[in-house]
Length: 218
Image 1 (cartoon, rainbow, N blue to C red):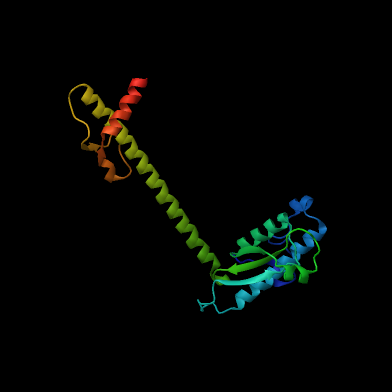
Image 2 (tube, one colour):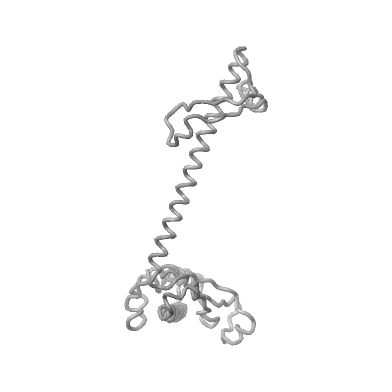
């Protein structure tokens, strides 16, 4: 994740890693804005060097946060998006806050719009960033899979409940059964979860009244 290209090993060529000033966005970035973005990238690279120099075995150091880009390096929205993307692709997080009146004055920038101070957080030592990213992606995939399985199960049970309400209503109308009881209903189709082979489906009087209303309105 922490691949610095030429920007790290000799000079600051921010076009090398694909996350510096983006040529495709030059139409919306002035020459002055690009110079400030390059300056912000340089400050970020210095921050990364500092993180690499920290003790990799000292867990108390990380996450490590510093205010890296001062209010004097104003990034337009387009430049901020590009800069933040580059930071995130290095395994870090960028956050900005509005500069205080004192910070505005110290920056020497006289524009009327908002000025920001950007802080960078390095969550783990750069050497461990790739491993940390893999863990987060695996956890996110597992969470998504669990949510999908829960949604599928909920849909299956809803379908079983609907069928049971219809069945109970038909049996009452035909004088062959009673509603309002708990029924253990075999699944109509093969289920991915074997626990769905038999589920308790509760049919209430309210369910039957609602179903009756639907039937009569057709």
